[in-house]
Length: 222
Ligand code: PMT
Image 1 (cartoon, rainbow, N blue to C red):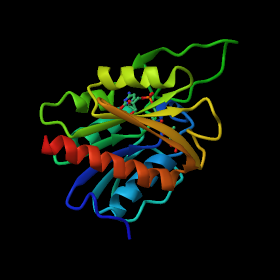
Image 2: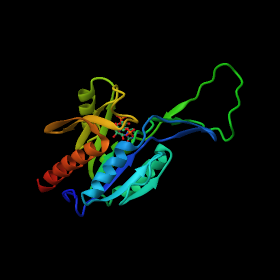
Image 3: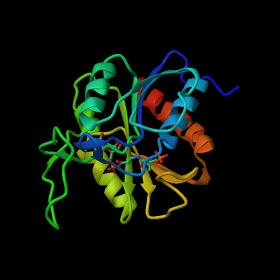
């Protein structure tokens, strides 16, 4: 049994990719498998939390002890997270949300005609920044998937998005990050940081949840 550091707490987690439709049979997405987010959900539940997992499309089974809400697009993920965020203590945004969506989604399958075609894209809403701007916001933890200047960019994202913590993930290394079974990260918060060497995502998730619970309790007692 793990220490019940989140007993009585409600934790909202996003995981996996989003899919942005081009037409009825095609979409834009990314390589997120959902493994990191699902491992966090399982670790939080094993440490006593009530977990809501808003998940983009993945091949993973529903983790035991968590309430999974399946979504497809970034807009659907935002709607589900906004609805749930008010009665959760902690929000961990692990999903790889598509930054752009297709401006005009075709109602019918697009036929090939010319040698080239282009698709116009519109910015998607930033789910994490939206939640972190709420007056009664949960304790907000983001991820930063970066290929260069990892710590500097992650720290900038933490400040810009008004986060309590950010988990910097160097995704230039294929052995960690997207669709791998292991990960290595550095966690930043306003007055500290801690690095975790490469390990299985399930083991890392336990370490991360312990650290998040500790920082959460500290800010609540201040
Ligand atoms: O799913 P796996 O295969 O296990 O891979 C795990 C992972 C690499 C996807 C994960 O560890 C990770 O890094 N997740 C964040 C991916 C990401 O989109 O990072 P970002 O730096 O682009 O976004 C910064 C933060 O804003 C993230 O917390 C993201 O969830 C959030 N965001 C981004 C865009 C958007 N429109 N809405 C958001 O909420």
